[in-house]
Image 1 (tube, helix red, strand yellow):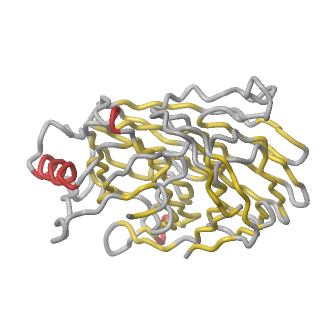
Image 2: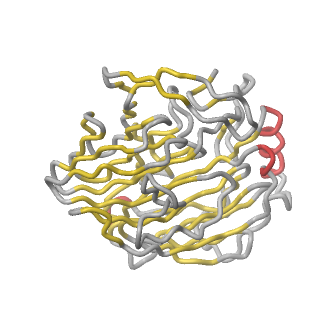
Length: 342
């Protein structure tokens, strides 16, 4: 479900990348999306908490998919074992709190994903990958995020990027890891002293930060006013701009403010996600993003035909060779904009 705070303000959003004139919009200070449980896998399905996409919100900047899972006892859940599957029109971002995941992709990358280390995989024109929690993992806990690619970048080649950001004290009782973009200060240059920007390259300006706060502290986070921002709560009781958020909630603030106030009533950990408003309409279905229904159909047909568009994942040893795409619905898939399906 989605809820709004009662206090509304007028914000002037910036010009988009196409140079369109800014529009004055009335936006609630905080939009709260509560997660829905989604099972992944077979009989011992791993359950994730999904907040985006949502019928009332498709994107925060270009962040278009937010799955939050764990902490899960892998002895009980079976952990993560996702056979080779395709992606197109997007980038995947994996961020772990606990556990390890073995990644293999059709770009030839074989990597172990560890807590506190961001991994971004680009599947523009097409990529396939598998994800398996390691045998040493007893607790699995993290987030899986997607970034939608603008139409002009939809055919980017396969690529895998990795970065281990340092933990930096940014305010009393507050520590941060900047895994994507630059943590703003409100003044130029937009980088907090001692907080290095992430070297991860993205197609649109983005922000991704893991933040831990001790109970009783407040941080007025300096943010880029041209960005939308979301706060995803992993642990603790947090108040975002006078709006309480519980574990799993995603609180969203539209562009305009240059600071966002966060107070921790208990020891807390959360992700701060941000980006320039994404103005293109796209169709999202299964693991594909395309400009229209025809693009989704073409991607599905290519995957089912084992086209070189997605390539092969070597070294995966699970019971199932690959995931087949589900059947398309009998109706034409509708595009969605940043605020949901039109």
